[in-house]
Image 1 (cartoon, one colour):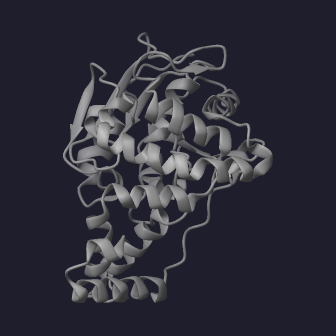
Image 2: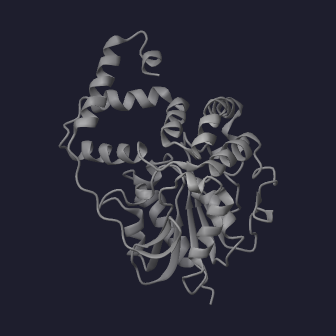
Image 3: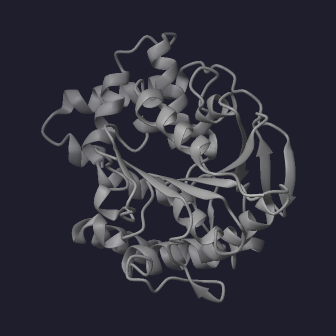
Length: 329
C-alpha cells in the first residue's frame, strides 16, 4: 500500500516510514486500569464506570478494543457520562479463542442481554459502530428503556458497491484461513480498513514524523493509533456473519437478518435516537438506520467520540437524551 501511494514521491515514502518508526519508538503514558467487572458471561464482562443514576449500558464494536470510549483521563466519554447523573457500564467483549468459533453476532447480543438482566431495572443502551447493530439485537432478548445509536450501520448497501466489492474480495482471500483458525485475526481487519482510505493512512504517519513525541498532540495521536492498531480477533462465526450476511447480503437493511429465533428489527415502541457522523469514512451516513430522531454530528466516526468538539457535538446531546428518557420500573 505504501509503495502504491508513494510511487511517484520517494521523499513522501521516506517521511511516512520515519513517522512510522517514530510512532513505534515514542514513549507512552500509562493507561488507566479498567474498572472491575460487576457481572460476567463467559469471557464477556460488564464493567462499572461509576455514577449513581439509572443504568446505561454501552455496547462497543467487536472490532478494535473499547477504550476509544475511555481514551485518556481528560478524554473519556464513559467517565464523563458517569458524572452526569447516570450509572455507566461497559460491555467488554474480552478475547475470544478458537473455542468461541461458533459464536455469531446474535450470540453476542444474547450475552449482552444476560448481563443487562443482572441490573435490576431495564437499562438504556448506547451502541457505538457495530455495537449499535448488536444493541438493536440485544433489545430483542431483554427489556430496555431506550436505545441510543452512535455511527451505527444497518443499511449495509449504503457503503456503496465499490467498497462492498473490495471488502468481499478481501474476505474471499481471508475466509479459508480464518475458518481453519476459528477466528478472524485483527491484522486482516486492520488491513481491510487501511485499504478503504489508503491516502489518509499514509498521510497520518507523514504528519507524525514532524511531531515532538513528548507533546500533548503526539500523545493524543499515540493513544488513538494504539487503539486503532489493537484489538482481539473475531470469532469465526461473527466474522463470517458480518462479511457474508451484513456487508454482502445486507440482511439487516432488507429486513431479513435473523437473530436467534426471530428477525432483528427496530423496536418502534422504544425511545430511540441515532447520532450520525457527517464526515464518517468508516460507517457512511447512507448506511444508518434512519430513525425519526436522527441527529447529524459535524464530525467523523472517531472524532465525534474523542475529537476536540466531541463534548459539544455528541457527549452533551447524548447525555441530555439519556436523562430525558422516562424511567421504567
